[in-house]
Image (cartoon, rainbow, N blue to C red; front, top):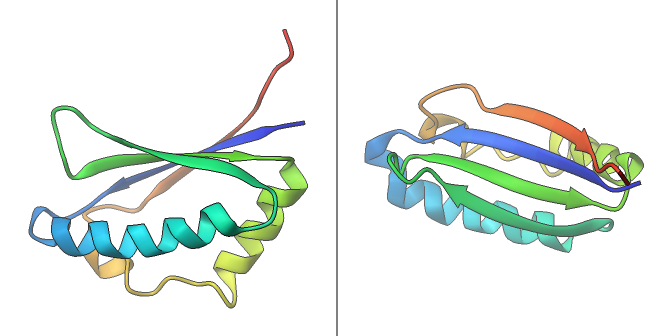
Length: 97
C-alpha cells in the first residue's frame, strides 16, 4: 500500500539559497531511490523558509529502506546547520476509500 511521508523543514533566512542547493541534491537522490514514486516540495506562501517535502513511496517497506539509508551511508550532514528548527516527519498510508 502506498505511503506518503511529509518532511517539514524550516531554513534559517540567511541560509535560504544554500538550503535550496543542498535540498535539491538530497531530493534528487530521494527521487532516484528504489520505491520512490515522487517528491514534490511545497513552499509556504507566507514564509519562503518553510518547506514541506511531499514524498510518495510504493510501500512502508520502501520508505523504511530509505530512512535506513539516510541514517547511515546517505546521511546528510550539511543540512543541519542551515535549519532554523528540528525537522518533522509524518507518515500516512493512502486509503482506498
